[in-house]
Image (tube, rainbow, N blue to C red; front, side, top):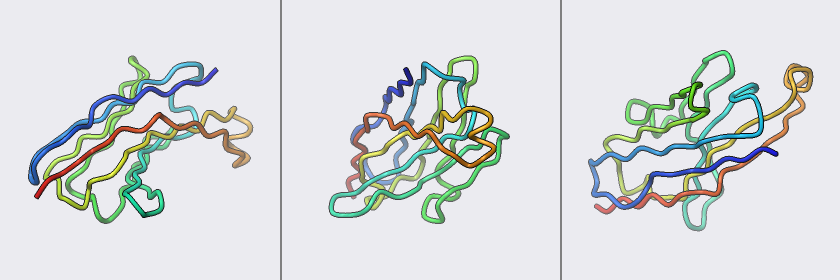
Length: 124
C-alpha cells in the first residue's frame, strides 16, 4: 500500500525559509513522477513543482528562483526547499506521487497518491 508522509512546514516571517519533506513507502520511489501542490484558503489547489522519473523539473512561475524540488532516492524522500517566502505562499502544501506501473506510466494512466498536507504560514 502506498503511503506518503509529510513533515516540515510551520510559520515564518516573510523572507524566511522552510523545507518540506515527503517520505514514501509501498512503491518504487518516483517511478512515474512526483510533485508538490498547494492550496490557499478559498482557492483551488495549484501546482508548485514537479520532478519526473527522469529528473526533469518544472516550477510554477510564482516560485521560480525561490523554491527547489529535490529527491533522495536512498531515503525514498521528496523535498521542497522554500526560500524568500512571501505572504502569498501561505497555503497547505501537498506531496503527490504517481505510483503507476511502468506500463501504465508509459501509457499515461496515472495512479495518484497524496500526502496528508502540511500548513505553511508566512507573515508579512
